[in-house]
Amino acid sequence: MDAVILEREAELAALAGAARDAAEGAGTVVLICGEAGIGKSSLVESIGGLLPAGTRLLAGYCDDLATPRVLGPFRDLIGSVGGQLSRALERGDRAEVLEGLRAEFGPAGRPAVLVVEDVHAADEASVDALRYLVRRLAGWPLALVLTYREEELDGGHPLRRLLGLIAGVERARRLRPAPLSVAAVRRLAAAAATRADPGEVHAVTGGNPYFVAEVLAAGDAAGLPPTIADAVLARVERLDAASLEVVRRLAVVPSPVPYWLVEALAPDGSTALARAERRGLITVTPGAVSFRHELARRAVVAAMPVAQQVAAHRGVLAALLARPEAEASRVVHHAAWQAGDTAAVLAYGPVAARRRSRPGRTARRRRTCGGCSACARRSIRGTRPTCGRPWRSRTTPSTPRPATRWRPSGGRSSCGAAGMRAPSGTPCGGCRASAGGQETPKPRTRRPGRPSPSRRRRARPGRWPRRSATRRICTR
Ligand SMILES: Nc1ncnc2c1ncn2[C@@H]1O[C@H](COP(=O)(O)OP(=O)(O)OP(=O)(O)O)[C@@H](O)[C@H]1O
Ligand SMILES: [Mg+2]
Image (cartoon, rainbow, N blue to C red; front, side, top):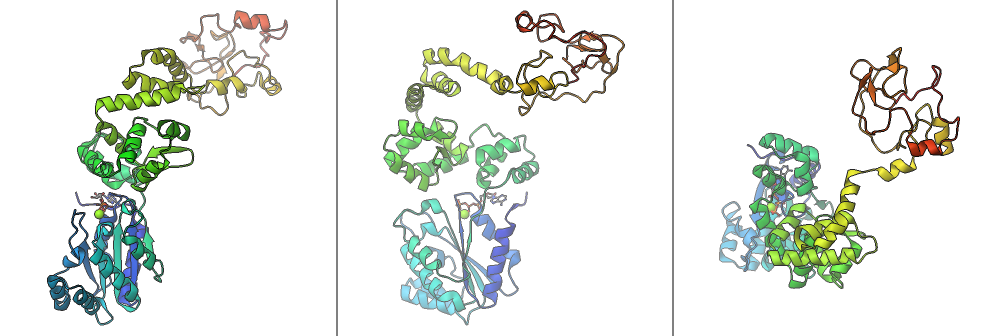
């Protein structure tokens, strides 16, 4: 399958604009920044077809080596550029290299788009050479395109000074490729003919194109492709010990961690958290801390020894139980799966189960019956609906029912409410207890159409709807 690049129209237009400027002798800089895998390289690799006639595309790469290659990205140009620059680069004389750059890209040179990839990993000599170019390129036929990962730039990084210099360049463009949308993931999933659900893939990857491609290739959004685990762990391992410890404590919480819990798990951990945030591993908002990608969280947990996972879950459980109103589902998760706290599971499990099985219950109790014609006025007055059916929220979506046209039945449906009948096989819309005389499973055991004993006691005599042909029925 050919590599497809989606949702990058604006970025490609900006790059094409920079190339046009360069062809007209108005040199410019384009910065492309974003996290690993967001698609910086894919973007610059797609600009070949957008260049004006006669414009060259040159690329050099900064390698993430323990000892960076001196002038590494420029040395990649040897053979693709003129003799003066190539010879200077081979000799490695820095002053000569700068002169060679002027000869190659200066006013007398052919228009060029020079891409330098991953400048966060550039050696000092390369950063110097880039600063030399940035200071002079305004009148040169050169578009300098730099890609970098923002999360790799710590406080004293040499690239900071270069970025400061670029801030003063007229026409400089800053591109920040966004994560892919669900629609783009759907297209990629269709092209990959995978059985993974695009919505789930988007949720676990956060739309990061590299993660998306790997999960689609694995065909399973629930797992953790080893390639992703390796990529994430390479980043995690570079954290300092304190940040790593905090990240591990938070990683066992499978959702954004509310700030009170963060503070309980990592008191005085704000500096450590900030470092992990700068590394692009977590996202911090005033209310919560979450992993930038669910897959990253999974990778961190998977790399923790079981003993460490258990300890982390116990820490979360203790913090949850110290709150006056602990969230039952969270408690059960941490108690049951790892911490082995049977007492907490027994105490909170039934609560969590009840809450799960009755969504929207509170809303139903508070609202009116939803507009049943027999009791609308009473609903407005705030008393219970006359029809005796449960209160129903207007806002909580209920089970969709088929649109039914009712016709006179000439008899009573089994719920006793009607005198109207649905087309055969459809339950009575009033209480769904009958269908054209056929009984459907009834939710309650008491006699249909009759109030429960407790409701009978509460109802004042004469208030219960009289059974007459003229009475208005519930048609919902
Ligand atoms: N816009 C896109 N549409 C579809 N797939 C994309 C897109 N961008 C990137 N990809 C896919 O994501 C993968 C990673 O992209 P790329 O290598 O460009 O990321 P990167 O930002 O350069 O990462 P790194 O910082 O690690 O160099 C690519 O191999 C490609 O398969
Ligand atoms: Mg790249």
